[in-house]
Length: 143
Image (cartoon, rainbow, N blue to C red; front, side, top):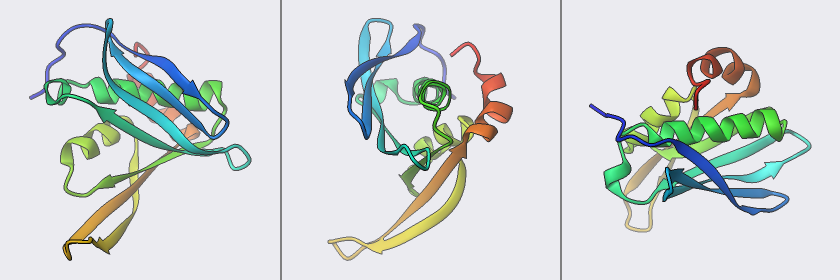
């Protein structure tokens, strides 16, 4: 069971570019990871979300979900994007749970053979501005 270790999760802009925006995930004054919007397609209003929490001690405490929701707020209401998508390994239930709590839904799957001749499955997940506004925003207003 996860528990909040205290401190507020905020995003600190690190590197804005036209097609990619990177934020540092801060827990109080401590950086705990990075989150970004990549492959920003301004014409279609879409971008790919990527997140990395550096140390395992910060996993399973809700910080990733809070960071994802904060980034979605930025993407949908400041950048006026209409959809955010991501790819996640099917064998990563912690990440999948994080994305589902933030409102993402599975939209498809990819299967490929790795260089070590093993099979790998990847889920494609996405969320629209409309869905985020209706279902998720009311649950995370304080983020």
